Every structure is written in C-alpha cells, then in structure tokens.
Amino acid sequence: MPRYPVGKLSHGQLARLLGRLPVGSGRDLLVGPAIGEDAAAVAVRDQALVVATDPVTFAADRAGWYAVHVNANDVATMGARPRWFQACVLMPAESRVTVRSVFDDVARACEELGVGVLGGHTEVTTGIEHPIVIGTMLGLVDRGKVLRTGGARIGDAIVLTKSAAIEATSIVARECGDRLSGRVGKRAVSRAARFLFDPGISVVKEAMIAAAAGATAMHDPTEGGVLTGLWEMAEAAGKRFVVDAGAIPVAEATRVLCGAVGIDPLRAIASGCLLVTIGKGKVAGLARRLRRAGISCAAVGEVARGTSGLYDIAGGKVRISATDEIAKLFA
Image 1: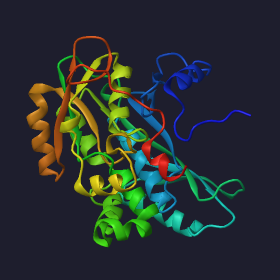
Image 2: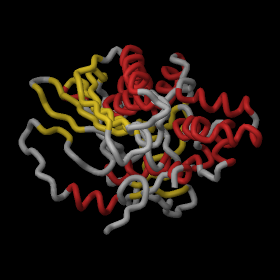
Image 3: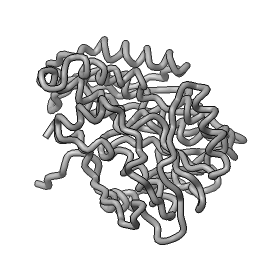
C-alpha cells in the first residue's frame, strides 16, 4: 500500500498526473490545469468565468470561514471579482465543531464578500477526525484582463502584501493555544488567533487594487508558504525570481508562535498575503493605493535574466518542499 507524506503532492508527481487528464481545447479555455495556477478560466462571450477549488483540511475551527476566503483569493488573483460559492461539507460522526457553525461561517464570509451561495453537498462520514470543507468559487472578469500566475516579465519587481504565514499563525494559536499560553503568554496567543480576521486571510481587496495598478501576475501563497508561492510563480512564468528572504515581512506574533512549535514562517501556509509582480515604475503607485486601503506591502525581489527558478540574492537556488511546515502540528 503506497504511503504519501502529508500535504501537497510533489510538483513533479502532480505535473505527471496533470498530463494524464483530458483537458478541453479551443479558444474557450483561457487557463487550464498547470503547476502554480490558482484557478481556471473559460471564455464566456466577452468575459471570462474564473473557477477555483480548494479544501480546508488543517483548520477544524472556522473551516467554513476559511473555505470561502481561500477560494475567493484564488479567483481574485486572476483579476476576477468573486461572485458565487458552493461547498462540499464532510463532517465526522463526533466533532467539537457543529455542522450549524460551519454553515454560519460560510454565510458570514459570503456576506462580507458580497458572494452568493449556489449549493453543494453535506454528509457525515467515517475516516475523518474533524470537519473538512471543500469549496468552489466562481467569478467574472473581462476576457482581456485575466491575469495568470505565470505572467511575470523580466525587470518586474516582486511585491508581498501584509506578512508571511498569516494563516499558519492563526492555526498554531487555535490548535496549540492551550499548551503555548504558558510559554509565550495568553495575550500573544489571543492576538495570533485573531490573525484570521486581523490582518485577515482575504486578499480580495489588494488583488483588485493590484490588478488596477498594472500587475503582470498575482499569486496567493497557501501550502508551502511564501517561498513555495514564489517558486510556483517562477516556474509558471519560466523566469528567474531573485528574492531577498530578509526583506519578507514576518509579524512578531508569527515569529513567536511559529518559533515555539518549530515552524519556519516562510514555508508555512500563508493565506492572507499576496504576491504581485509589477513593473518597477509602478511599485510606488501600487504602494500608495494599498496604503490608502490600510494594506502594507514590501518589495522582496525582482524578476531577472537567467536560468528560471527561485534564487536568493547570493545566487543560490532556494530549496522547496512539497510538505507545508504546518503539517508538523498534525503529524
């Protein structure tokens, strides 16, 4: 019986599996399945219907809330406004989280984003220990304005909004808060648990701002963290991404909690921040627009000439793992 490591499949294995799939052809398919792409896009007259699917498996608490936002993020990174959501909700026979609370969280998150619920499926099943919510979000954008993960151009700056490991910080606090309170303090745990809402895991607002500011590509770094997100953008574009890891913002609460459980913040699930490539001459304008919306950002690297992949500023290739650091909590 095969045994797989917890987390995403390796990129090589996933690429081989994607190659086995029957993919639609013709001019209607704008973006199909590929490593690093956050969503698919299908042409509908003069618009593109953008579709994203993501599960929430690591976070039992507020799974419905997470599911709406992580899927909305994937639609927004293609420049589309999230419009409709549906979910498959799988519940264990015994759970401290009620099915009603999952539905309530879905409702609140959708109301906040102005998203309608189309439907889905709900069942109680064996073989799981906590609720799993598999969401699908749909959105619309003008056909000519679809942004791809692989759209970066040589000479672009690489910008990160907010900070690394926002989602991981919240998960650590919610899953390990009781045992960490004595080490890092109840106030630090409480603050970290609120990362779900402040700074929040949604990047819809900044994605819409970045698209209007002239972004060439956007990506929502999730499993594998910011470094994996950068690698996925580089691979999708076939470009050389040179990153200064020291310039990647990491909040103090993230440093403290991730350090307490032995997690690298740059390699931990990172919903809540947005990676953007944009012409260097447009960075200042993007920063101003984001600042007016109350969103911080930092330039963390550039798209350079040379062999494609992710490199540090010293020229060394950055190691990427398919297993997210957050998996250490559930091993």
